[in-house]
Length: 117
Length: 149
Image 1 (cartoon, chains in turn brown, purple):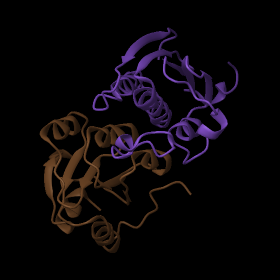
Image 2 (image 1 turned 180 degrees about the vertical axis):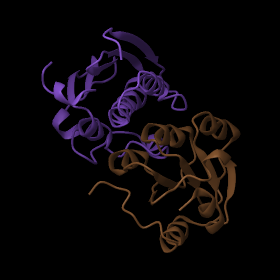
Image 3 (image 1 turned 135 degrees about the horizontal axis):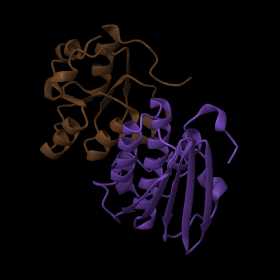
Image 4 (image 1 turned 90 degrees about the vertical axis):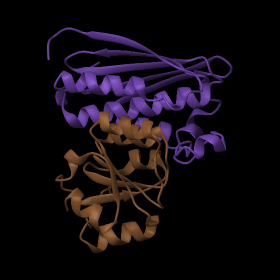
């Protein structure tokens, strides 16, 4: 699924990363624990998180994650958005809570396992 | 990549969680420029990032020394923090001594050292209570170099 479809499905707002909108995503990871993201995630996932701090972007950078979706209407400060922009990471925010956001994406076809078994 | 060795050192600032990861980010960029394999770059970046965060969280920062040659990346992170009293316990997933303030930032769940072990090809830790900790991470950049060094 393309990032632009994710934007639509989650009724989200794009905060940065227009150039990533045609990227394809087959798996997603919903987590507020960045160490778990680093432990288990394989490449090319969408990261959904309710955690808002610069280390979310940093973790995405280390993991080659190209799309972060902040849930429950969380909106990172400009500094964080700027950091993501620099690193070529798209950032969205949606009002959906975690479970609903993950459920919507799963139902729409993002069903691959994004983690190591 | 050329045959030379690239050496670089970084200061890991104390108690500044917002800039934690700058050193790992720089090393990642260097490896990308050198044309290293993306999978090896990721292994290096994650293990160094976890070590860097540990130095910030537990030890008032420290110093990272990085050596890159054709075959491997070697990273030494030194701190003068409290040391690790029971290393075996600290290596277990889920064991943590991090304060709540760190957990609220999405870390401190007892995955740092296990993640380093998971992603580094070689991990050596020397620690002394009251003196500090030295973490040495090696990631091999070529597949046939394992355990040669």
